[in-house]
Length: 189
Image (cartoon, rainbow, N blue to C red):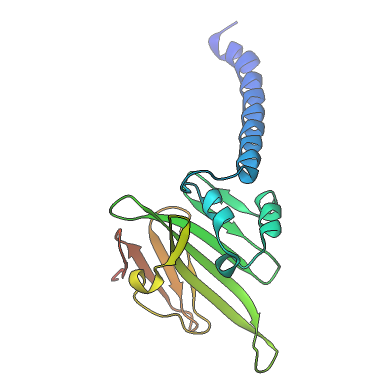
């Protein structure tokens, strides 16, 4: 029996078993981490999400726990990214950005609908915040880190990888901004 035949006969089935076991282990560790108390400064996107006040997450503590194990939630711990949807009309993203000093700042977006208090009709809504968690307190650094204000119909898309965010304008145009470690700067084209 040649090397390639031995590899096909023994290594591939073993590799398949190890992949399945590895996936199950990662999933069980993730679920355990999702419910364990946080006793240190948050580091992972899951820890930041769990600590995020309802004012920024838009959801209750109970709903957060449900979303952490929902099949529709995208959680990329390695890249510091999370995307979840609390209902069919909304989508939220969280991404970790590092400052020049190595501190973590969290970008949080919400894209969906809200009820207009004047007309009581649904309207497109979006929010974008850059938040810092320090000494058990959240600080909103959006005005310091993002050079423009969102208009109705504009929305920010956070990156799953990298440090470039996309501002989608209501007229269909898109503007990219790169994180410098302190501020987002427009990328000239």
